[in-house]
Structures are given as C-alpha cells and as structure tokens.
Image 1: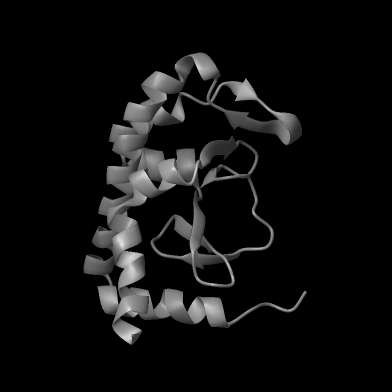
Image 2: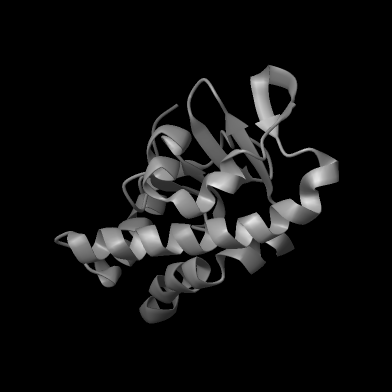
Length: 154
C-alpha cells in the first residue's frame, strides 16, 4: 500500500500534460509576481504548495492530489535557463481580472504544442534538480507525501 502512495507522484510527473488536459487546467501568468500557474484557477487557496524543483511547485490538496503547479520566477529565471519555452512565455497577451495574463482563444491551438514543450521542460528540470542534489526520487516522493500531512494553521 505504501508503494502505491509514493508512486503516484512519479506517475503524475510522467503524465503531466495528459493529466492537466483531463483535469481541464488552464494556464495563467502573473506579471507582477513573475509566476506561471497551470491550474483550474489561479492561486488555489485551499491547496498547499510543495516545492519539487528550484522554480517548480505543486499545489496539493488534503488528499495529496496534485491540483496544479506554479513556476516562480517564470520569465526571469525558468525561461532564461530554458530557451525552448520562450515561445510559451510570449503567448500570454490577454489580460484578465486582477492583472492575470492568459493565452487568447485564437492562439489556443498553437499554445497546445507549446504546452507539450513546457511539460517536457518541467519534467527535465525536476529530474535534473534531483540529479544535482543530495536527494533521490524516493526522497521527493516521501517529501510530497509528508507535505500533505502537515497543514498550516489558518
């Protein structure tokens, strides 16, 4: 049973793009915070943020399900070090309520191929950070599992 709990995060990382599509995640960019959100809604307040790589965080609900991710800083660091996603960074031109930028509907078909590239880069960064650090994939899984159990007091 313990093994199944831990492997869900690795499966999620590997299936990130398809899971995001099935869950109907949208992609948002906050210029002021230089943060990219790939979630159902920007700033999911009930979820806990868990850092999985230098600039990548998962939003975890109380059951440990990943409900989205955040990349911060996005343009000033993530894109600067991952030129293959520069096109994705330039897609955010439609301003929404609260100053959040989204991808205009007329560019959604092009955006999907850029999301595939973004997904590959996110996976690469997670695995690269693990390889360069003093922790393993099992350590990351244990951290994510324990992050769900520790709730901040509101």
